[in-house]
Length: 465
Image 1 (cartoon, rainbow, N blue to C red):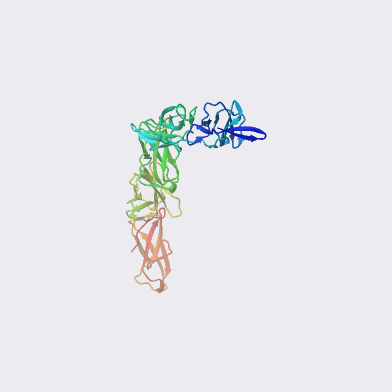
Image 2 (image 1 turned 90 degrees about the vertical axis):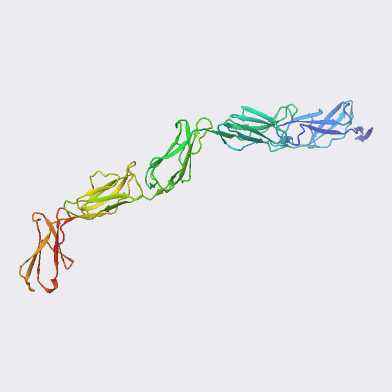
């Protein structure tokens, strides 16, 4: 059947055969970069020799006159395609226009790679999952260590593929479709996935130790944490994890100088092989507690000893060990302090026979760290020589207005150079060896004296009767 149409004074015969556009590949979604073939099929006109004409978005494509229109999908070629056919032996005979066929190419998809775990022990496996968030029908390609090192392929009707691996390394995947019986030629690929590193945990064990194995650490002290790996520390890079404010560098020994509260916290370490992806498990955890700088405590059995006697002085730092002790002595509160030359063991006890003002401090045996000085302890030497008071005149009775001289005599100490002290009714008086005054009712009372060695301010007699 033919329909005759008069157009611009000439007659065009319209063939009732309807052209239909088909697409290969026929997937529901097309991606940029895929090879596409559009075919203009004249239904019922398979035995007729036709010329074909193509339009995209109502614009004629003059160079395209074949039944098949081939191109690589891109954003610029998206749009609505139409075709019409004319008989080769009768250019005035043509079909109607086809229905518009829409081409909308999506951006190239990217494969997504996931894993159930990143580490595996000897003999175990890790499951990797590769997916393309698009319709099913992809072929999946797996790679290890480089994007050119194909591990295996997997055809599936699902949108994802799983692969079990037992070797450590860096893995990628991507999807492809096409090829023989597939979607275009050549094969179309997605973008590579981001890589995932799978690490094999080897039997090497990391052990974390504190240089000075003590329960307490003090502000200002210097210590070190050491991460040791069984079998030797060669070929490893070190990784640290800590709850403190300061993170260690990737080295085997972390030295901390001038400890402060910022160093306080839990520490652990592990080793990562410099070549390969092997790692140890995390080491044991070491907890650092930093406390205020300690103060030494000095105690004495007694603070008064007789000439020729001695007393024990004990120096300690509370609730800690690992200290040596230094003792210091000075004559008076204003004189210079000198160190007591004695070999002090870690029990911190010495014997002293000199009077004076004593202090002590602790010294860490391994680091030389110093505690604060102790409070002072004063040791006094008491002579056995007894002072006796004599009076001139020696009459049994004294009357007001008489001149009186009281003399403080140290029995057996006549050759010693003394300083004297006096008191009346327990109140101190100014005086030397002799105390002279005029008798009166106001100065009646009980007089006492004592003597101090001029060369040793802390050495004295007892008080007289």
